Amino acid sequence: MAEKKIVVVQLSGGNDYLNCIIPYNDPQYVDNRPNVRITEDRVIDIGDGLGMNPVMAPIKELWDQGNVAIIHGVGYPVPNRSHFRSMDIWHTAEPTKVGNEGWLGNAINQMYPKHDNVVAAVNFSSALPRALVAHGAPVASVTDLDTYGLMSHMGESQQRNDALQAFKDMYAQAIGSGPVMDYLSQTGLDALRGAEILGTVTENYSSNVEYASNGFAKAMKGAAQVLQADIGTRICYTQHGSYDAHTNGIALQEGLLTDACGGIYDFYQDMKQANKGDDVLMFVFTEFGRRVRDNGNGTDHGSGGVAFMIGDAVEGGHYSEYPSLNPEDLIEGDLAFNLDFRSLYTEILEDWLEIEAKPITKGTYEKVGFLK
Image: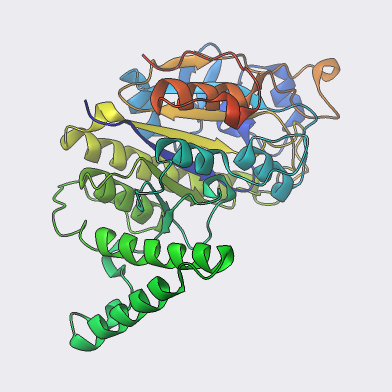
């Protein structure tokens, strides 16, 4: 049986829930969004008085096929409106204190306690998200697979081979000279090995899916290349944004969602054509939603957000409930969350990656049931 893989899509900056999955018939939505509103004639209707943002047609197609779970009202107790702190909470699964280790980094250590899979997780961005950081957990970070590899500018020259060998010797000699040097040396050797393995994945990749030329599409193509190569990668991580639409709210979000939905759709088709769709789950999240009332031109930081699970293993549909927009139900003008994000993590960890959730979530959370 093939190992299950997850592709995490982080929508950084606070994706506006109300203009992504839109309660377009709700009079409170109309009243609170006099300027930054998606009008009924533009929404893509998905039933239950809700509609998708007009640029989300690719996701609507996957929704119609039953492959999209929309997770409503996701958040955590005592919401924090700081981008940095809120994302940190999602990354470490620690809402009440500053966590040291990422939830996926801990997952890697459970899957590979000997740290012997240097490409267990591949991060497609120059910044390593804290979600992937845990002591000893090897993670490869890639900005561009086509040019990836240490000192690749030297090509296959003897000079390059000599330089790489010098690095290997240097790291190997340092092992045994103390815990800090051991850790740094092992990390260095892991990076060399990871670069060697990842440097081969584009050679055997063949697909007729034409990805767009934007950075997010490139990352999703990279994830497809890595997962189709069967090199042992279980987690791919991508970041997109910023969705921080304090001004120019409608246009900014629609531009970003256009790229995000296109990249997700193309990745889905790519994995399907490679007969690997059953084993790949996409998890799309953002650190928080926006305030219910617009600020005249955009929206400010809020709470209560929307997440998506996408893939052939997903039982499509609405999960949890759309938070109430009634004034008495809001928290300081924000949507009240009604589903703890650790419920999603529990289901991903236990039912998809097949590892223990409790050491990572530090508690027991009821699963949502989005997997078939």
